[in-house]
Image 1 (cartoon, rainbow, N blue to C red):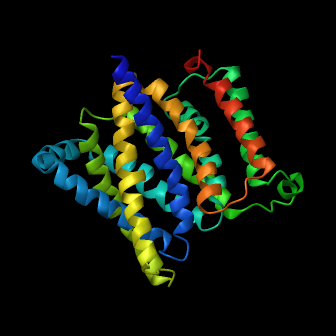
Image 2 (cartoon, rainbow, N blue to C red):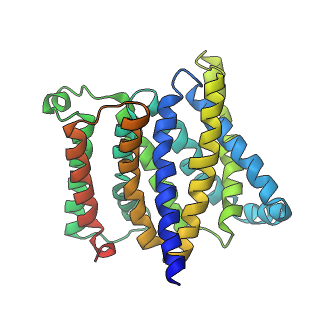
Length: 296
């Protein structure tokens, strides 16, 4: 039993590491492959691999999809197509460290969506924690300069990343209404939906002339995105959740901005400024306040 628990912590640590690397891949992809082509290529690669893995269960997947198609299409488009499309567009306009830090506010957006959608009760401590978290976001998107907020002179990539987090929060909350289905089989269905849902965005890139086919480096980056953030991270996370449960597992997502920051400095030589550190501290403190029961 102890060995299983230790394995869970290893699984979850590596899943956060792979998700943290996604921001690095997004930045490395600039000028190597257009952002919406990344999304289409990513989910095409994932669906091919998962189709091979789940080929004996595809009829079951189709049956479950027909019974829950509205929910599955909505969740697939929000959590896989919309989130990733905006994410990779954001990566073309801001640094990887900012992507990771803004993404760390996901628990706050999940709480807001839960309140609006599921009518989840929220207490005063959670409201305070929520406000503290968003103060942390303001620190990073304003680069610690209040005058940028006054003049609304903010980085479009940072603001887009905030918008992306809303879509993934909708997806996360929506998973509470998921049908009875194996995790990998559900991911297979989502991969098909995400791929089809990405085609209109790809068409826009083609028609407005912003599409550029991948270089050799771009193909390598796309392959890494398919294998690590898309497949391995998801599988390892599901294994970890199965062993130690969702509450403790969810805490490991807080490692994503930490790994992103470390990898950004080491791999792509980004600068880690004091306002980044202050922002992380404020955000983590806010998450601790409104999610305190998980830590007690």
